[in-house]
Picture 1 (spheres, rainbow, N blue to C red):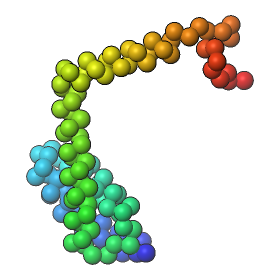
Picture 2 (tube, helix red, strand yellow; picture 1 turned 90 degrees about the vertical axis):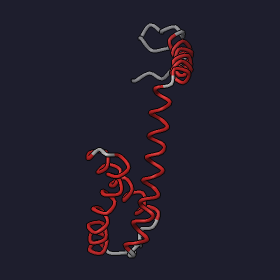
Picture 3 (cartoon, rainbow, N blue to C red; picture 1 turned 90 degrees about the horizontal axis):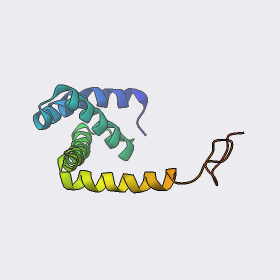
Picture 4 (cartoon, rainbow, N blue to C red; picture 1 turned 180 degrees about the horizontal axis):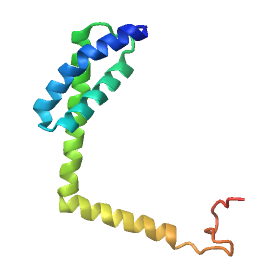
Length: 116
């Protein structure tokens, strides 16, 4: 396992490279910094003994690409009326089940836990 000095040196060398990569993908400075930091954390959790900068950057960039694709897919679904209608219907059903249970005299729902 790499010691703290090696880890810090690797991250200091990898962060600017990953930030530039993320900036090409997002065109937003705050988003690219977040994406680069998340990529570093993901890559480091996969291989905490990494010492090779090129392999570390490659691994982090792949994690960043996956996170960005998931974020874009989620944003696209949020804008799609079919997804928002289905989510709203799902939540209405859940709320109906939760709030349809009668309250007991102490204010808790029947069958639920009380804070005593």
